[in-house]
Image (tube, rainbow, N blue to C red; front, top):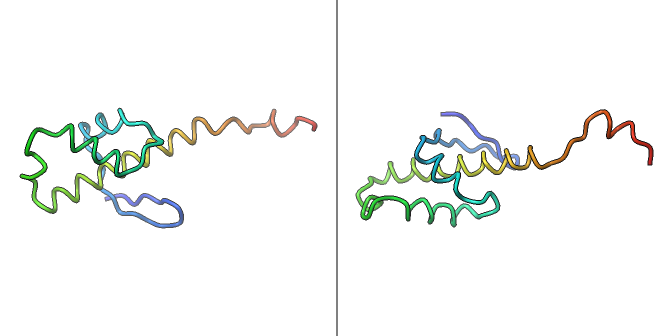
Length: 92
């Protein structure tokens, strides 16, 4: 299990599976974690959530949280703007 750092705290979250990555990838990165969790739960087969054991539910929630936070981090990295040498050389 890898550790994901977020806001000076370390969260130990499990790696996301392919299906979780695909479902979470459909969510906007600005959505809150509870909204993403509701969406993922709605995509499960009817009654699947109720049949999951408590440990499996925690694992699934951890996978969803980790994937959503990674997607949000990737968005920030990509859309943060370019601050390379040309930016530094520009005079005010």
